[in-house]
Amino acid sequence: IGLKSYSSRKSSRKSSSFPKRAKINVKAPPGKLGIILANKTDSKGTVVSGVRTTSVLADKISPGDRIIAIDGEDVSRMSVPEITAIMARKNDFERVLTVLVTPQK
Image (cartoon, rainbow, N blue to C red; front, side, top):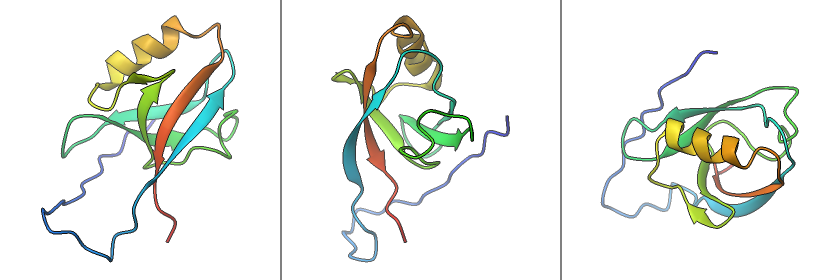
């Protein structure tokens, strides 16, 4: 299950060399999603650290993406266990995940 730590150095300066992350909504069907989450190392929040090849979201979510809301509920500052608990509670239903996607290089 290798959980990787991502270190991203953020500065207060705005830099045009870093593309802005796009915010998308992803419909997630009932059941397990096959995504692996990790706590962000540089701030609060959770990042997608891996996506199983069998995941129903494999073509929509990538490692490095951040889940910031589930069904409109802000989870941007929640830890992995908190987000996992919400996902488990809603496991029998379709969920809408709001995701900040990693900019493509």
